[in-house]
Amino acid sequence: MSASHGLTTILAVAVAATLFVSYSYKQITLYLSRRKFANENGCKPLRNYYPLKDPVFGIDNIIANVKAAKKSRLLARSYGNFNKYGDTFGSKLFAQKIILTREPQNVKTILSLRFKDFGIGSRETALGPLLGQGIFTMDGAFWQHSRAMIRPNFARDQVADLEAFERHIQDLWKLIPRDGSTVDLQELFFRFTIDSATEFLFGESTDTLKETKSGGLDGARFATAFNDAQDACAMNTRLGPLRHFNSNPKGKEAMKFCHEFVGQFVDKAIQFREQLDLEKQDETEEKYVFLHQLAKDTMDKKRLQDELLNVLLAGRDTTASLLSNMWFMLAKQPEIFAKLRQEVEETLNGELPTYDVLRSMKYLKFCMNESLRLHPVVPGNSRMAMHDSVLPLGGGPDGQSPVFVSKGTLVVYSPYSMHRRQDFFGDDSEEFKPERWENLRPGWEYLPFNGGPRICLGQQYALTEAGYVTVRLCQEFKELQSRDDEPWMEKLTLTLCSKNGTLVGLTPVSG
Ligand code: HEM
Image 1 (cartoon, helix red, strand yellow):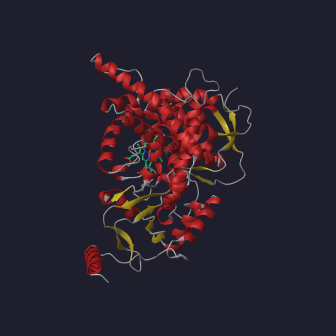
Image 2: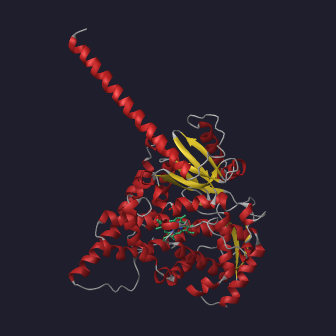
Image 3: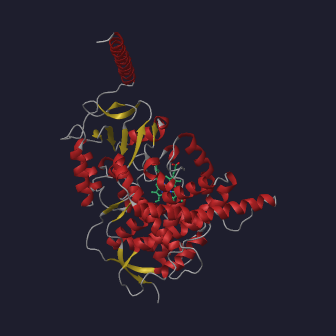
């Protein structure tokens, strides 16, 4: 061995030894500081873990989930797991540590009390190809800025444009058979909400409910492309890191079309603002257009396009799913539909509802609350620990002690399973019973719209829209029959709606 070769070997060993010592030192100090933090917060080990047969990757759990998804029983499986393993338990997916919870105190902690410790994780990677960077996909200062920019658009006056809803209702009437033959309301609700959301956000409706559409806009094609693009995003979310192996040309094509379609409106909005700036006028448009307001804050084309798509995604399927799920259950229980119709008749006596009247209708509110409880349209969600943190419950032999959450752990929370807890909602928690809301005043155990700084911005808009459509259907049709022998089954994409749609027959009041 030459002297220089010997020296190189000694150097390599010295470097490796130094790296090893420094790595070990870091690990030991990290371990000690975490132990101190956990002790200071009274943390105990998690009471329970999902019993993985494959403790390294958790493949058996993935397979069980895929099987459950095929049978449309993913949510039922997750609910069953909580019933078996407790309200908070640990698991693992590949190298990812996971804590699953349906404990309101834990949910409040990640979404509000320790908001800064938790982020939305890989949402940007999964949804970014369609949504880019916007309120729904970003964390931190970027998100804060988005939220500040978007929030003023949800003030009362803007969410109460009932005339716009009424125009789309008139289109809807033409598509509902008047001879009692079967119609899928779910399909129509999805068209209704994209028509109304695009009118509110872009200033022009996709008008997918119109039987014939004049003009050059390809609204129906956009609606289809947006669905396909969302499906591709939902698949990305489910695949996690494996998404890189899934080339999806149909999804990519759909996203390209969505960007071009929305891009036209963004260009118009920018021209509109430039013109106003030239004329040094303040805008006094007759109709409120979300995009034109955003263009006051930024003229960055990509930014405007991304934020529009973010809000469209957050607001469109959610409201349609609420309507579909609720009308599925109303059709199954005629006595509830009759009671709701009675409230509508007594309150309105045939008049069109106003914003204040909608808000005053108690039974309508109970029905919407109950639908969002039993079938929350965002049934599961998660947050990633960005720092070491702590959850108040789930540790120790009784599960009542705090639990240490190391940086990088994914905390998955389940409104679906939380909303069915019998200790909060009674022994009949799996039944659709609007009357229970007479006495319920829930806190964090009822969370359809999320809570804390990222609470849904569109809550009032959604409840106004769903309330308006429901009241108008009650005024127009006196009988509602379910045309589906099966019970409600889950269809879980980015939101939760009914697998077999909402198949009903309707009898009109007149004609
Ligand atoms: C029944 C209807 C709706 C439900 C159940 C619902 C539910 C939710 C939930 C659970 C979140 C939190 C997501 C998270 O942080 O992980 C959220 C966020 C959001 N929602 Fe809604 N939503 C509905 C309708 C709407 C509508 C109609 C709009 C707008 C037109 C809207 C706009 C938003 C926005 C912008 C966010 C993001 C807020 C942020 O991250 O700061 N939502 N919604």
